[in-house]
Length: 628
Image (cartoon, rainbow, N blue to C red; front, side):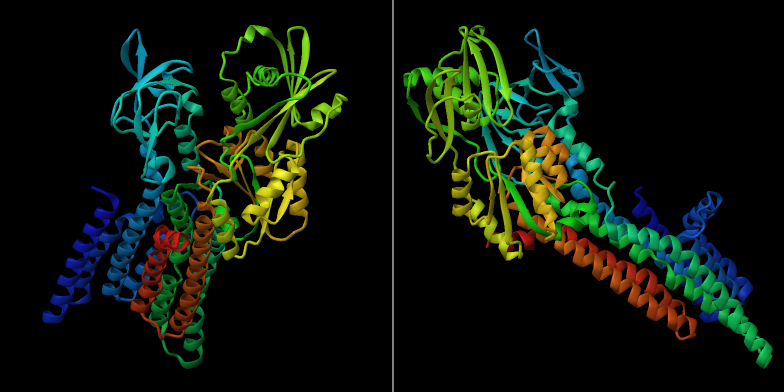
């Protein structure tokens, strides 16, 4: 039986016993010593677990919590012969706790549904037979077989078969992705209709699904300032309230006793008990973390993983965003548009470039190899040195070749004319002679212009490109998309300096969105790092605070709007709960608020705050706003 169901059943049984007591008291006028055991039975049925928690926490030195407040308040109600009110406080408190558990389960469900990603097994192909093993037992380079309807357990690329993949668990989107031989596939996707043979490219612990699960499991570790405030608030608030209730129960009746010789201790003990019930900080302690948890769950539905509630608070305050260009603002689908031979043939230029890029998986390198098309004899390559931010130095056929940007040729004092064409220019030369150049173009993602417009609608007008590409290309991308600032021709360390320059301006929270290994330091340095989860590098995903699971940057404005909604709900709950409690606390101390109003100030306010917090889970309205 679930915890919620157990609570509700006990509350119903306790309420039935309570009704029996009320009916008997009204019909045959029960004496208090007969009514007491009936109400005590109802009280223990509904609240024995609260009583046990209070005793256990006291034994561990954790005295002042909501369980302690409820026990002291209800014992006080019994002591002043308010049996029915003591029972109803506990019954309604359990109803409120059940509602809280339901709300938490709903919000947690949006995140832990990602746990369905976890593959239970892998079909390892051994000696033409399929052997069922744990995903962690499969090694890189081995082949697995995935049948229709099965989850892909490990990252890899297809060597046989074609199919449609359901990537909803990874991206939040329900559309299918068509794959065939040569395509990369990510663990956690579901194979819909074709038998696939996949060569594993990463061990399980480094696979997409393992990294997502790790992020989900650690998502609640980093608390927002509002959550930390509530934790500290409850820590000091509860003992102050208990002392205040004790003073209320003793001081006023003692003064009245001395001055007027009237015994009003029972009345003030009742007021003190009401005071304790009113002061229970459940509404804040429950609803504030629940709001953040719901926000993380709502973002997960969107296909966005936020690594902790502290980042939601920062996301809501974003005022500036910087973007990497290649693969973030552009498709990253590079294609060679032109090969020009200057002191060598066109064929020689592409030949040496392809051999230089043989070991590289960079999109530019892939486009050169794809254009070359011929088989590369790697035995001809005797030495390859990659020079960060500049290019490659290749030793081949007793000759040294330079393949890279203008910086590389200038550094080696090669005589050449720098090309000013739209696209990425790759120069090819020997140590003494310039051979020619290659022009590679990349297309801007069609949604970038809409993204910048939506950011401006959120009053985020300060947008920047940080790129290693040449200034002319970066400036054209900025002009075409409406981006304000450009930092171009940057080495990895220059990107960090550029982001630090922006941060030093103190113009509000700065986010950075990127996908490459060279973006990892910048993602860590920015106030909020946003990485691509599908095609982004492991280093970028590790360094970032937010992961876009399907690399869809158009989700950034929706994520910001969701974060703003979460923070609005958090502050609504804090202000509402404190205001109501303060008013009812004053009324209770003055004797105008009985235990029933106290129950509303505790359970009622908590339930209202929880209902408000659950709105964080519902993102459809926000998504529609941005689609219109």
